[in-house]
Length: 265
Picture: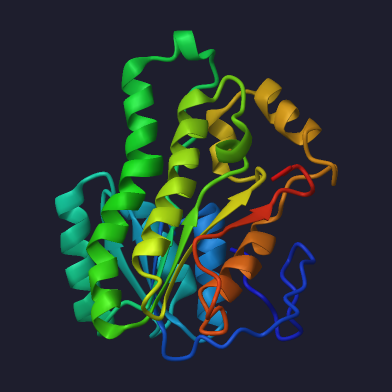
């Protein structure tokens, strides 16, 4: 866990400087039991939001919620690649929280790191399901609620790979490119309301997703970052916290880069 002490520092020495006001807001974070999703959840909780953690790993989700502990923490075990399950989870979350103001689509997998012509078709389909289709399913289930209440903030987690296309990661790159385009489409469809739909396209962060990819690919990703290091999950969470706040009242359909200087457009 990376909880912050009273001075704003966590155990890795990252300082949380800015206070974002999310008091009274109700959030859903997918893939929230670990990694980026967990850090985003912590930041939203620290900002005053109620958060429902969605994850398919029931045991890990229970462990995470026990560690977070508090009246603002809720959870649902859900496979976000199952559109019917997503609808059910959204309805159950509304029963828990009274509504949904914030949706962070974070759940994702890397898939194999092999040339595109060697990419196993089942793995391709799995990556597209988790990294792209699931984002659509969650937006499809939650955005009508936001439209009805004339308020919502959505952040979809894409990747710098979706802008540039990483070699030996065709499915992941294609899925994340799709997330960026999906974000822009939905943003235009909801721009007449107080709804902001944006995405982030970060460089790689050191999370368990590294267990799914080769050291050679990890080295390649690091070599492309002018900062010379991977993005911290806390840095991603800090950006997301502002993006889902009421203060972000104009920007919609944007891809916020956290690429350490890698992004060229």
